[in-house]
Amino acid sequence: MARNLFGGTTADVAEDIDGRRVPGAVGTVWDGPSDGARQLTDLTDVDGAPIIQLVADVRGFVPSFYGPPNDAERVWVDFGVGRIALVSVTVGDRLRKHLLDTDPHQSRAYTDERLSGYLPARGTEVQSPVGDTWLSAVVTDDSTGNVIRLRTADGTERTRLRSTGALYLDTIGKKAPLCIGAPGYGPGQTVINVSSTAASPANEGAVFQVKGDGSVISSGTITASNLGTARVFSGPLPPAAPRAGDVWVKYG
Image (cartoon, rainbow, N blue to C red; front, side, top):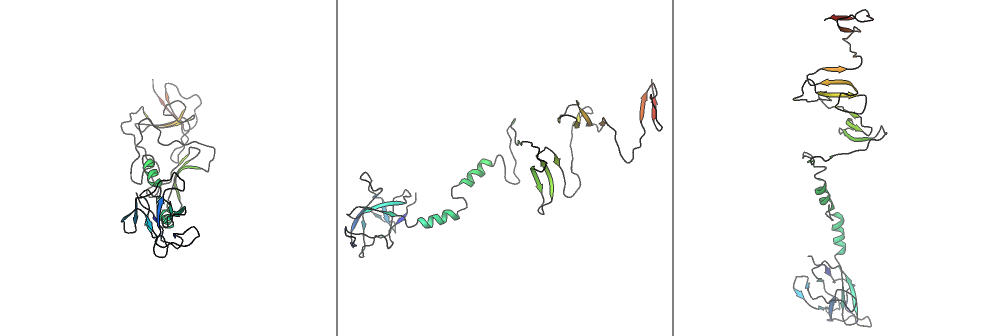
């Protein structure tokens, strides 16, 4: 572990009981102020050479020294008149480095690691265990809220999944807002099912369906610019109340 630097400032001096500096005074270093404190002997000078005791210089100043290898922020020195606390002189430098560090607590790296399986980096894939729900959102009656919103750099909104469950599709470039692939679907299988009840792939409650063979089934009137108002009937009997333009295909 790192050693912190102590001493070497105008405030760090060896004094006698009357407050006079004591040049050449010999002192000891401790890990606390109490009687049960432990003397620290694993110290070094500024060049890394081991020292056991502190020796004040000819002016009575405590020279710079490195504390124990345990990141200690405070030690106590005793030059014969009681223990006096020394605070590391590099605490300000380390605080500034801590504030400027992009991830001083490694919390960003931890979060990235934990979320990588849920919110992957751009271009990677989400691996969802079988049977697990990848994304669950609560639908509310707030028609203005978005669960998912995609937009271009100029702020134009594109695909949005609203909090009501509605899905809006506005594409960029080629105008193909909805493309549905249905490989292997048979004629009787439903590719698109619009129900009068809650969404379901079943036929019950269906008002509009697209089948696997391309058949379109609608329970209501289909209106288009190339369709008139004619009605088509088939069977052994004519329609009960025919109208002009009706078509009857007799069989049986």
